[in-house]
Length: 614
Image 1 (cartoon, one colour):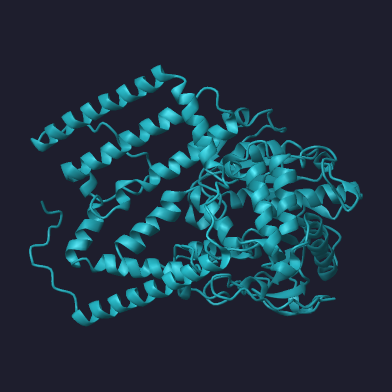
Image 2 (image 1 turned 180 degrees about the horizontal axis):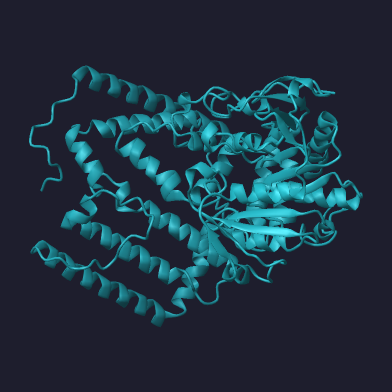
């Protein structure tokens, strides 16, 4: 059997190159093994703990399944019947007859894009066998009577991780593309892949950190995060950036962006053609953006209240001071939107009207529907997380990145395993994945408060449920106009959950649903003309998200233009363009600033304590 169409005999690899590669692999392997042994001896070898509660969840699952043997037997018979159908299909294909497949990959599954998965009957059999088995496993465990909802969600999630890991695309002999490459290179792809694997373990200091992109291909301020501007203020938690105007006049109300401190701000400034910040400048906005610090142990006690007062409220103070304005528009993205909503309620309680409007990008304020992230948030897991954070003062960014990557394991884990370790290739330079791998830490006190009071207890939606700076936070006191943009495929902030938060405000709210997911649906410039978005003409939000969607109308293109129409309809007064260097705050350094340039995967973790700007 041959899966290659090449007629010439493959050339043998260069012996010197082979020797060099083997030497690198041997040296790396010996070094890593030695380091691993030293670490184990130093901390003492202890049995692994089930911190995620996976074993307990599956023990409960098995108990429930065995309590209903009839259902289990029925599931097994259905599986056998589908295997018989597949065997018949494969025999007919082997004899040259065309028959419809028994199982097909879901739309958007990129694992089986190689043409051999369709054209070669054996790989087609392997693919369909896997898909049938995966489907029956999911069907068996997905709806077990008697399991509590959280345990059921945990079983479903980790079953998917298991099934995805066993995909035939992840193994040498059952992936036609890898098989061809192994024959073509006489196995050198596997040696290079092993070298890549050791390199990634080395980079992760003993933990596997899968490399998603060529990080050397990007430099902040050079070919990513390139919109010119100035740092006009900084403190322990943030730098405040003001970007250079691109129009002769600007809107009177400045625009403040509050990004999530789980990530770095330049997701909104990747490249000029997809930069929301650059686009907003071109529309005539005076754009300010918070750039968060990457905290270390010295900031362990920084709380959610500190992020409110020292970051959000202080940024509002400084924007007004810099521009001389008494009102501004504010945008919050994800966790930054949660902070913005909290800030708006805090200011409303104090009769402070400087927030003329608020915009929320994929933001949860009511955490009733946490999505798959809820799998990782229960008393057992949060308590274990708090133990880790207590010992070092923060949650390591790589740990959080792994959690988010698991939500889309096939795209963000296994595709790179195949490319890097089986095909032996280096990852392609991609700005979005460069940003995705640029992880940040969470201060221990803040993160514990956030998980317990918002995700676990869902207190932010309750009037006075949380108290910050002696002020009871009540989202219902927010009366200024608000714009909510969520995305239909969001796996981090499900739009049904963000819709619940939008209904908490007392002022006029425009809810818009974009196409795609948490990142691509937001970073969707008009020039791309992709995805589209939905709006509902009702003057007040319907009671449920389902009712909203039933009355919604889909539009082509980007929601950015819809937002621009909305925000300028509130006030379109113009003033001469504002030069950051001529403002009252003065200039500390050029954008993107020093805070954003600190990368955990390229530095030893040391960060100079920032100087304060008056």
